[in-house]
Image 1 (cartoon, rainbow, N blue to C red):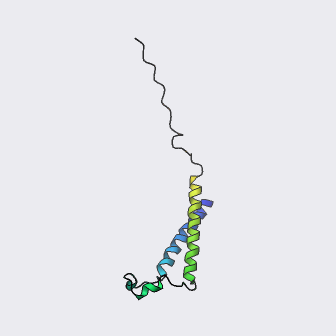
Image 2: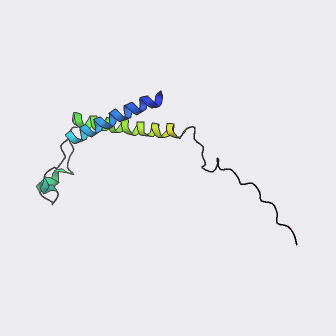
Length: 99
């Protein structure tokens, strides 16, 4: 039950995160910034206030990380620690006859 709930929250956070990131406008999105134009000066300048989309991106990323870690922990419970635990040992072969 709890794993299903975490999975639903995880998928929802993934979808929202994809949409929110695609809706955002980059800091210096013009092509001149790539080649050292005037737009590149704003890339490392003061950040300013955070918009609603950037806050939503931050919270979706946090939720995504937490649900990913939680699903990884729950997936590992109940499993053996070693892959060799279930391997059967072969029967001992009879000793060779002495001459």
